Length: 219
Image (cartoon, rainbow, N blue to C red):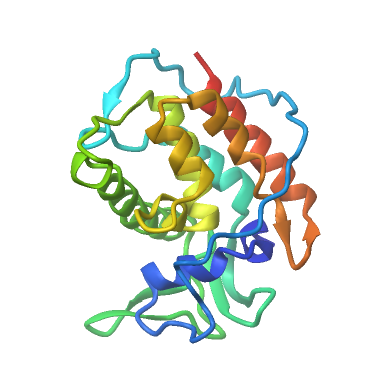
């Protein structure tokens, strides 16, 4: 089962990929954070990038983000109900093509692995667009925000799991503040604070946050 289904902010993801929104979902709510001790993670299976900084308006996720997401989300090719009863398929997908547009996943739906990857990329692109916009100069007091490819891929995995709300301009998270302050070490540590779901620490989220932090800091 996808670990994101146990994450409080999985409800935020629905707002981007699902037209009908849950009345209890609140994109302006910052999830409660708790500290976790950093643990190194082996990322030898990922592509290697240099440490050059790239302007947020020009950067895009690489296959490393997809690899990390697939590793921790897990895949289901037949529709299943997540922990709160939503019909889900693939890598946590909630809407698939149907009719003239997208429709909600329904009981009995099946897809191929390639379709699951396609839907993952579609949803991640939507999240990426939101995060990029929230860090453009007009939304960060004229500053030019830049990331390395590793930093950005880590943030995209994080965002696919929690939703893009952490990057919002109003009521910003500590992670956003650290990035704007050019304190990327603190930003990496902030990733470790989001490991709770259903009122308890989820080991799968601890593992994921550590992997994302390791990638974020990778040179």
